[in-house]
Amino acid sequence: MNYMNKLIAIEWLKIKRYRTFWVLTGLFLLLLPLWNVEVANGFLKIGGAGKNSMNFLSTAYSFPQVWGNLGFWGSIFIMFISILVIIITTNEYTFRTNRQNVIDGWTKMQFLQGKAMLVVIFSLAATCYLFLLGMVFGAVNSGSLSSLFSEFNQVIYFFLLSLDYLGFALFLSVWIRKSGLAIGLFLLYSMIIENILKGIINHYSDKPFGNLLPLQASDELLPFPLMQMAKNLMSGGATLSLTTYAVATLGWCGLYYFGSRQLLLRNDW
Amino acid sequence: MSSVLSIQHISKSYGPIQALRDVSFDVPEGSVFGVLGPNGSGKTTLLGILLDVLLANSGTYSWFGGMDPARARRDIGALLETPNFYHYLSAFNNLEITAAIKQKGTDDRNRVLQQVGLFERRDSSFQTFSLGMKQRLAIGAALLGGPKVLVLDEPTNGLDPAGIAEIRDLIRKLSNEGITVIIASHLLDEIEKVCTHVAILKTGKLLLHGPVDEVLRSEDQVEVRAADMTLLQQSLQAMPGIRKMRLADATLQLTCDASVMPEHINEFCAGKGITLSHLLLKKKSLETKFMELTN
Image 1 (tube, each protein chain N blue to C red):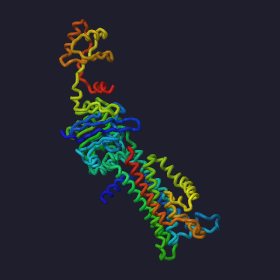
Image 2 (image 1 turned 120 degrees about the vertical axis):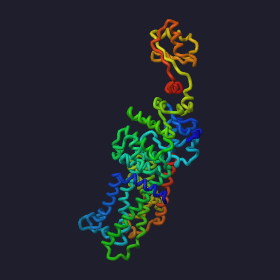
Image 3 (image 1 turned 45 degrees about the vertical axis):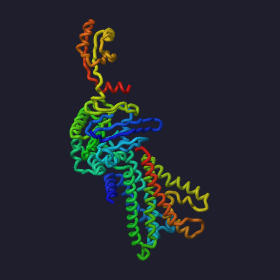
Image 4 (image 1 turned 90 degrees about the horizontal axis):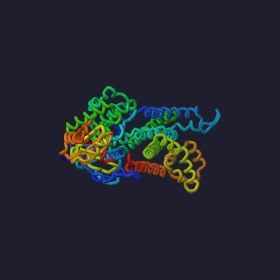
């Protein structure tokens, strides 16, 4: 434990006076609730058009739907933190401080463990924040607290999703080493490439195995709320269980760590 | 003298380029050990391997008689290639990270900043520093926490003449305190003035290594000039005890037996009717030796 504390203390020294860290974190902390306040109050009409159209989503802020709903929006806003992880990690390569850390007495593994700890802590912090927001939104919009915890596993899903996104960002940074390219690839992959791959795989397989791709696996844990409603209405079609997606997500996280480890140990710095 | 560092058969290639070929030597405790070589000879690659940021293809090394390498590095102050710091942090805060990784106290920071002349600028961020100041900070970071060994790769890069002299004095002072200093450089003048031992590398091969006075034990040189250089050269060819002659910059450089003194040469030439306009006994410099070895 002392070992981990020391690593975290040093990672904290690296970021606590870094403006980009505060700006991106601040934007995440500020924009996530602001966005949801607008959706909840119908200022932002998503899934409907026109002034008098029905706003399905605004109903999803009471317990227990609030967890899945906030979790979905969180899965989009976690991009801020993913990019932050990429910037923090690729900075080390740009400044060549990855080398200096090792020269000064770290092992290469300690360098990776420090960053992996950041990923875990950022994920935990984001999850706690989401929990807090959920409590506030839920309390404001629900009549009772009786169903508070009935969908609470979605908060755990958000933790897994954060771990998945941030772990992927870390792996990409260790692999690519260049800030701009890594951010570009991250955005391209998460928004376009993965969807293309998913489409191809799902088209040619009897079960939606394309949904098990790195980021999609955890996205499946927290789908777009309207999609969930639609699915419930339609039913039918082969699906994979949430447990499968949760296990797949954890599997990917393990691979990111192992892959990063191989990259770091096998290459010159 | 026991050794702080032992290098055994280290080889390293970058694709088709062989950067180091079977390099082995020991660095004695308390020495100022110069690693010399022209650009691209493998100096930085060797130090990178010793500091665990580059991987050797084969061979081993051990610090302090086999201490765990990461543990050993905490007692080694090292500057490799470039000063590497967090651009957005001040000198003071950068050193906080160095101290934390080395597990040394942070109260040493003011001392090292004063030692490298950056105390007044300690709160300025690294990105505002000039090249020389960055280099000074890197040397300061290497000194943090009182290392047993200093590894300095081209430490005078970017420094002005005063800075170079300061570094030289600093190395002497640290050496007197018993700290072992390993210094890689292509500036021979800089090495020659401070080193007790040298290793000379050329295209990845270790040409020779050992104490400076042993490596440079070889012959002294005598320089002569006269109005008629051709005549001088022809005449001296007949003089016994002169082993080699080389004409460079309108000066004849003679390599003689130990018995031949400048006055003998003067006498010999006078006997041939030649008046010397220049006669100089030159202790063989590292530079000359280096040029001989690497050309």
